[in-house]
Length: 623
Image (tube, rainbow, N blue to C red; front, side, top):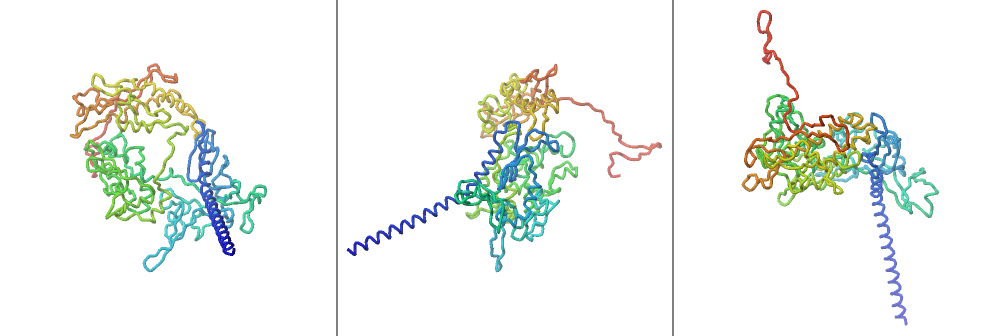
């Protein structure tokens, strides 16, 4: 009998022990779930703010984003010939997440005075994490800042932001306008935001007051049946406002030469090569990393002597005082190529002689800013440093995180919240398009509509020169008529963010139509005028190539010079919306020689006195 009782006691104790263990495990799991819910809550709040700010605006409102905020503007007149603010959506924890037109950043900053004494209301999201690090026989403390490193504004490396007021920090444009409240050794660069408390029913509340360091709440909201279960604080960065290390490089300007200055002559002599994106106007690769990287080391500063000497000395030859400046920078980037001689213009200093273009780099893009420290290649199984001269270290990467990014996706819409037009013209017949054309067409297509101008027909022969030699064949395509009508509609509406004026009220309807026609005409022939695919021997395969404008004689299969590289000006007698057209029609410029001015210039070659003595030769610069 005693054995049976002992066995029952053991079983009861085992059951109780297992119940206790399961209770503890369930309680721990519940706490973990609560913590995860709190961790996800700021993300969900911010996503809701972004959706609310950017949805349902129509074409009468537009939004702009910045770190910590989205602003919505309409067309009502405001200060400085701009439209007035409609709403401001905060992307950081605050007592009012949405504010109307009364939002004022100065008032917002003034409300932070004394935040450091109100711990139940505010917290510093940029409070550094201090890590002890050994260096030889000594130990030093490294401060890691979650958002903005104080070294950006620290001129003497004492850990205090001393560049305050009218001076930029180590990075151009980074400026602290006035002294920050609550700054001390523990908070050298504070970014205070409000605590938002989470009730058991999911509601977010902020304290109505504070007593002895404890938060006070509205008794009708926070009750014993609906207690506080946690609190959150957050601030949202905007990656689209940063410099992308995967797409930016160091731009070298190029434009169509229109004069005889040394700069124009160099633009004519040293045109960018195919795939030399860092010289394409408007390309993301024209964004200059030196704006941020010059804070790493003086070697990354783009000084006057690193610009072409022909711009200043007038030598007629392009050269750089530091010829390796661009090459060393491009070598650090995954997709920007310097190339061999002849493949590119070498930053506008050499003529391109290779007809196959500059090879496109295919290195893996950076997954994060931290990866910028490492190169793509290996050395003894280890990744090499990205900068062989060791001018980029961990401290500089940490400092630059607030200004650099590896991801900067943003919606490709215009101010009317409508699709942007692609600048790459496409042939109306998909079978005529090359692989690049098809890729661009895919990127420019949304909801089955391709936002790009079409070309009616390619050049076939001198007797069948295609639509480039027609004044209206391209314009009369139904697709182009729809796009032109779309632009007419947008330019007749007030531009959100810029008040009540329209392009029509500024230029008049006739001039507006002329401007739009010139835009269409330039884009139809301005790029992608011919495409040559070469075989293994390097010769052009004419069965896989195309030309929009009549090709040059040396690339034609049978020679000839008829209409070489020309496009007739677009001329129309009617517009899609039936708007005004002059009696002789609207006409663009085309790619066609046009005499616009004839001038006779008289220039003295010497100056003589009355006694016929030469006083000065106007071309003698030694006197």
